[in-house]
Image (cartoon, rainbow, N blue to C red; front, side, top):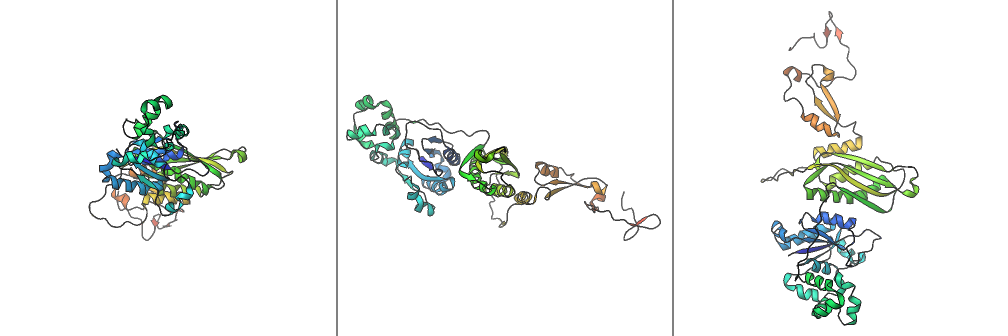
Amino acid sequence: MLWCALRPRLTPGTAPSSPSPHEPPPGPEQQALAWWALQFSPRVCVREEAVLLEAQASLRLYGGRRALLHRLRAALPEAEGTALAVAPTALAALALLRTLPQEESALSEQEVAGVIPAVACAPGHLLPTLDALPLPHLSAARVHAPVLARLGCRTLGQLRALPRDGVSRRFGAALLEALDRAYGQRPDAQDWIELPERFSARLEFTGRVETAEGLLFGARRLLGQLVSWLQARQRGVLAFTLHWEHDLVRRGELHNGQLDLRTGAATRDTRHLARLLGEHLARVQLPAPVQAIRLDATETEAFKADNSSLLPEDLKEGEPLPQLIERLSARLGPDRVLWGRLLADHRPQHMQAWFAASEPAAKSKASALPPRLPPHLRLHPPWILREPLRLDMQGERPFYQGPLRMLAG
């Protein structure tokens, strides 16, 4: 088995969790990292302060153990991960993860270089590696570490060498069971995470955000969670809502605000969603400081990824047209970016209809065009002047660059 233990980045002011036999509820950082890890394997669980990933079944997909771990370690900083440990069992990976530094100062040089600390244990070296670890690295042994230390037992190897009957009577059977699971001598059942049917994530700020542009910093983290949820469920987002909660101290009678956004097509591109949200937030003024935000995916659909071409394609510069239309609509206003639709009508003022390009019905209405217009309608422009032009009359017949003639009909 190939187990990977991932440590999430903690928000400022939050102390790292200590090893404990009790399972606390997963925090938002753990949940976000667990959803992100689902792209490597469906066997992901949250255990104590870490996220555990069982990736044995994914080795062939990623081209072997070395390629998988290299890709995982390279992508982990973008998912707010700070450390990686690899071992043949879940508890062994968790114990090895605790050998890595947790202080931000110890990680600063590696983070600047874009490399996170990591440790790995091959299957053939599991016994000597675990034997050398201190007792507190195994959660079940942590509470008994002071008593065992007075007996001269300070490592897992020394604990394993004690008579099992005596350990069971003195410290309980749970300690030996955890020790056996760590060494791979007993199966270790896991509670795999399950994605919710609807996405909703909340983030509390450590300080008070005074401007709408400041909300984008925290919203980027929620957008990353949204994209991880979309990737795991093979869906793309069509509409989402950003809610913000004002500071209770200075809010007074104000109500919490929200911003509803739509995309022209189903997408799970983090950069595009962040740009779109930034354009809309640039026009928002907050009446009071904000203490928390929440992101909800209100509409999604099955995502159809583009097939890669076997032959080399021409280089494509710039962003796709639908994304450009969305950003222009957000920057200029929905009433200034319109989508035109031709109508089979002989009256010039009824030959066209205009809809806001950001409306969800604009694309469907544009696709509902008649397959072919009559030949005589193709000669007429699909627009008329704002102010009608009075024509000259000759013998009660309108005259404009020549007499009026019937061309068709």
